[in-house]
Amino acid sequence: MAHQDIPKHKPIGYWLKHADNVITEHIDRVLSENGFTRSRWQVLNIVYQAGTITRSGVLDTMQTFIEARQLDEIIEEFVEQGWVVEHGEEEGAQLTLAEAGKAQRETIFELQSEVRRRTMQGITEREYATVIDVLERMVSNLERGKEH
Image (tube, rainbow, N blue to C red; front, side, top):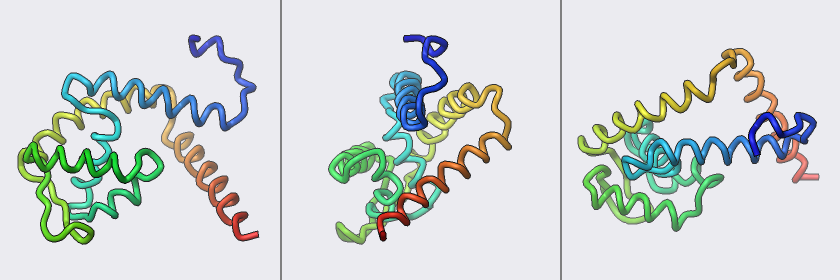
């Protein structure tokens, strides 16, 4: 079903789920030629941005998207490919990007940036900030509601 065929009166849950699915499908398609998926990109970028981070630190950010087992598989692949270096013991091991990982991240970053540009067409920074603010407040309202 094409986007224009979807009635705009659908509830926010529909649009959140649909947006995430469309974004993931598009990113996966664009990145697939380089053996990447949205999740693999996110893990590589999290390690890059952190400089040094533990697996649990990566999982804290990624737990909405993947399970711990999937994260471990991605990290193991990155270590085997020489993109990520792991220092220390299992739980407390520190992850950093090797030079090969940084080069791979730059390649994928260019592709990812193009996806983001396309996604953001016709959307102002202010509109984007408003959407993020509203979603953060909705989540906060419901998470606080767990206490009651």
